[in-house]
Image 1: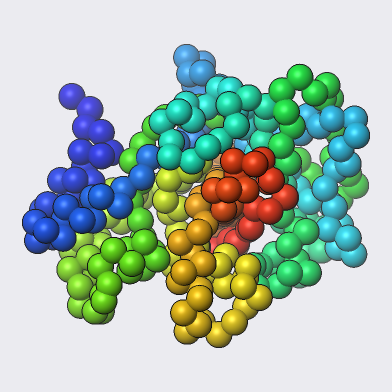
Image 2 (image 1 turned 180 degrees about the horizontal axis):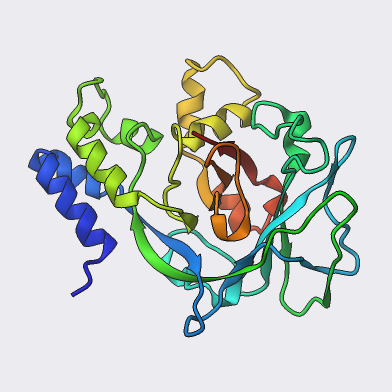
Length: 282
C-alpha cells in the first residue's frame, strides 16, 4: 500500500523528535502540488518549456536594457487540484513563468531579490480564461527549452529547518534544538531528494529558506539581523518553484531552482505582478 507524504513526515517526526515537539512540527506541514512529467495516461496540468500562448495585446516579457526573458513553464489552473491547497489559486485561466536565464548575455546579469533593478528579469503572467491566445515565436537570442508535459498530484510539504514559521513556532529556538538535529535533517533530506517542481506548500530550498531572501528584498535590503525581516518573511507564501531538469535541458546555476513567492492578499486579488523571485543553487 502506498504511504502518503503526510504519513511519512509524521512518522519521521515521531521517530526523531520528542513527542511534544513532533506534534508542534507536524502542525506546520502544508499541502502542495508536485508537478511531474506526464505519461500518456496522466491528466496534463501544464508544461515546461516549448513556446508560450499569449494574448495578442501581451508583449513577450523583456528586461529593459538586458533583453528578452526565456519561457520556463505554463500551468492550466482549471486542471490543477487547487482545492486541496491552503492558498487561493485561480480556478481557471493560465499562469506563465518567464526568467532571464542568461542566454542573451552569457549569464552576466543576475535576477536577485536584493536588486530591485533586476526584478524585471522574472515575470509571472496570468491569462484569464476566455481571452484569445496564440503561440508566440521566441525572440532573437532565445532558444526555447524542450517541451515536457506536466501532471500534478497533492503532497504534504515540510518547512525548512530555518524557515521563519519554524523559528516562530519554537521561539526562542537554540541552535541545538531537536528540529536542527542531524538525524532528523538527514531523514527529511532523504525523503525530499530528487527533482522537485512544486505549486504551493512550503518551498524546497537548495541553500536556506527563500522566504527570508524575498522578505529582505521587499524591505529594501536592510542588514540581515534586522528583526523586521523575520516578521515580513511570514507574509510570503510559495507560488511556484521549478527545479533544474534534465528532460528540458534546464539548469539553474549548479543544479539550482527558481522560486516565485507572493503575499496571500496579492494572490487572492490576482496581482501576479507583485510576486517576488529568487533562485538558489548548490
